[in-house]
Amino acid sequence: MAGKSNGKGGAKSVSKGNGTKKPKKLKQIAIYGKGGIGKSTTTSNLSAALSDLGYKVMQFGCDPKADSTNTLRDGTYIPTILDLLREKGRVEAQEAIFEGYNGIYCVEAGGPSPGVGCAGRGIITAVQLLKQQNIYEELDLDYVIYDVLGDVVCGGFAVPIREGIAQHVFTVSSSDFMAIYAANNLFKGIQKYSNSGGALLGGVIANSVSSGYQKAIIDDFVAQTQTQVLQYVPRSITVTQSELGGKTTIEAAPNSEQAKVYRELAKRVEAHDVSVTPKPLDPKELRDWATKWSDQILAIEQGEVRSPGALI
Ligand SMILES: Nc1ncnc2c1ncn2[C@@H]1O[C@H](COP(=O)(O)OP(=O)(O)OP(=O)(O)O)[C@@H](O)[C@H]1O
Ligand SMILES: [Mg+2]
Image (cartoon, rainbow, N blue to C red; front, side, top):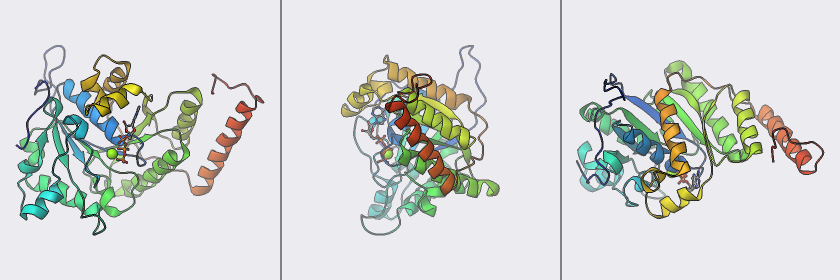
């Protein structure tokens, strides 16, 4: 195994409070969402919180930027599978797996040289490499969490959904329209592959959602698309401070309110079982929905309506 654990070296088997061991079943999860919305931050804190619960976790960065796992490794970057392949021609999966906080296995798929080739191919190649070498079984993993991309813009980025690699998809979204637009596009991708054994939607992780109206917008969107919010995650300076220190909030500020939120998220992911086929809005429905919220916010701002539950 490349790299060293920099964490606490926690429990390796899943023991519950009463000492009984849960039967092991690998859960594979893909996290999608608009660029810059907080996927890697949320994923890394989720991985850290799941590992603190005693699970064996692999975080698999699928972004050509290869920055998914850096807060699990003190702000350092690891060589990607595609880098190693370019350098050596053949790669043993173990050379591309690095241990991070609490023994979390960190992998970055990487991408082609900038300006050349297809970025989605990196994911296909990297996933195939680990699968062919039976790494998930060998490492006896409980969770593989794929930190994917903004949009299902090409077939490569749809791989974790399309090939049945992930069983559950979670999307990170704020209440901003473009984040919701990206989530709605993702729902279209999930719906498209749902009949051929693709992954289904576990829910929305509502990131940077702090005020009443932000919550109301997200709640309405999930109601319209027949999905659910798994967890609300507020915007927090603790996240900023931890990231600047090269760490997850779980590691840097375990007693903070924000760490509690990420631990709650991990418990909800742990308890989550059944995912669904979302019902995306068509372009006209989405436009009408957005206009309705635009009018509503304007009316509240102008004091024409009292905001129910102090929306703003
Ligand atoms: N809840 C939060 N509170 C404060 N800052 C946050 C929160 N979530 C994310 N951020 C910050 O937002 C920035 C972008 O987050 P992140 O890199 O996780 O997004 P991403 O979706 O992975 O981006 P990309 O699409 O580029 O991979 C980071 O600097 C991160 O610290
Ligand atoms: Mg990212």
